[in-house]
Length: 97
Image 1 (cartoon, helix red, strand yellow):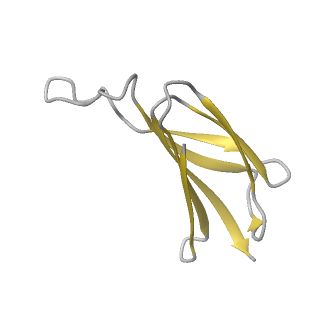
Image 2 (cartoon, rainbow, N blue to C red; image 1 turned 30 degrees about the horizontal axis):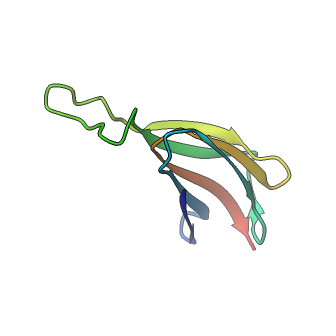
């Protein structure tokens, strides 16, 4: 698994990017500290394929498409199940430090 986190000070968002490179799903728990979270949910954008060789073609342009969901934040903790071979972008709104 690969991970990256950045803060967008203009949009007041913590952006966490998680990549699951395995053929099995992975469970991740994020413990968020140092910022004041403004909501009880986070936006999650997921791009996943059935295998490493999944791709779109002109005949099948929607084989791989991003899907947007939400996930709950409880006590500054967020748990996310990462699908196999997936890229996950989690956006969490905050109000300040």
